[in-house]
Length: 297
Image 1 (tube, rainbow, N blue to C red):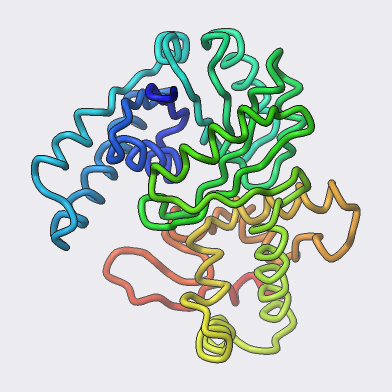
Image 2: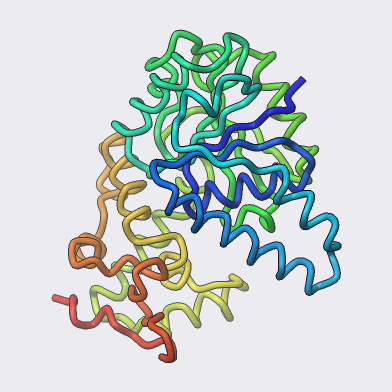
């Protein structure tokens, strides 16, 4: 039975995953490289719980219980000693994930399931960094994790039926809707989403329309709740670039090649909401404004 959860990474996805498990009654060890990162993650969780509380969907007692279910660690070995499930939510970097999975495999109990929140990297390749490929699986949560219902459950080549069934059923206890997906670059969500975002950037790059105009067309014409360029800012332009690179490398198809504007913006540190500037300006006191034009050809 899965009761003790470890989440590796206290960033946007990691703290959201920890929040979701803790609010569902699981004991969670949240791991990051520094106490500062962990403190930021806990602050975000507390703020998000306060928002739910303000809407009347949570009591003060439930908030306290949720926060009480979370312990923080900077030493991976200490955090995973009694884990039933570890969910890795580190940066979307293949080398980093392979290193973390090697450590998880070394320190975690023999029966512990090792999951990754990767949005594009091969589960089979990640599993090969361990000696328990049958217990390695993908759990791709959507951002913001406490709100979004979907979880892509991705089987690697060697993922056992027992592992898949355990994670599929447990996802339901989190109030999520699990969807079975096979192990191909980008899985389903990003294989469809990222080419759309990339094509939106291409449309801007070619001067067909401006940032707000492109987003407005997709919101009003296609009933999208958020325009693709605003969504890219929300995801993080660096994350979008990393996913497109994984798909381009995996399929060798030019339709997945990142647009030069996206590459330039990431190199310039314009990463979206996280950096305060992307296709829109998110700096304090400023209304969202078009900023990509300075990078246009």
